Length: 180
Image (cartoon, helix red, strand yellow):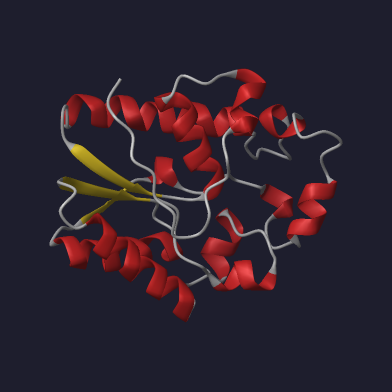
C-alpha cells in the first residue's frame, strides 16, 4: 500500500532522506481520509501484521490503518523512499527531466543515491526476511511509489526493463499478492 496524499505531493516536490530529516512531509486531510478508507477496505482480509517505511507520511498512514485493523505497525528502514540525494526537495518536473530515457531510472542515481535496481535489492532483502518469519500469513506493507513497484517486481518475478511496465501506485492504493 502506498501512503496517503501528503503535503509534498501537493507542492509537487521530491521528498526522501534529507527532506525527511529536516521537514518531514505529513498527510493532508485527503491523505488521512484515504488511509481510513483503505483501513476499512482491508478489514476482514486476514492481515496479521503491518510493516511500514519509517517516514512520517507512511507511519501516519500505517497508524490509521492499524487502528482500523486492531494491529500495531512495525517500522523497517528497507521500506523507505528511494534516496534521491540532491534531487530531494526539488520539483518533480526536474526529476523527470533528468532522465533522458525512462529506462535510465533503472540504473541511474546521483551522488550516493539509489537507482530503481538498488531499491529492488533493498526490498528483496526485506521480503526474504519476512517470508521466513510470516510464512503463509497476510502482511500489509506501507511504503512509497518506487519501493512498491520494486517490491511488486520481486513478488511477480519481473526483471529488467519490464519493471517499468508495472503501474505506479496511486496514493492510498493497495494491491494484494499471493505467495509464490
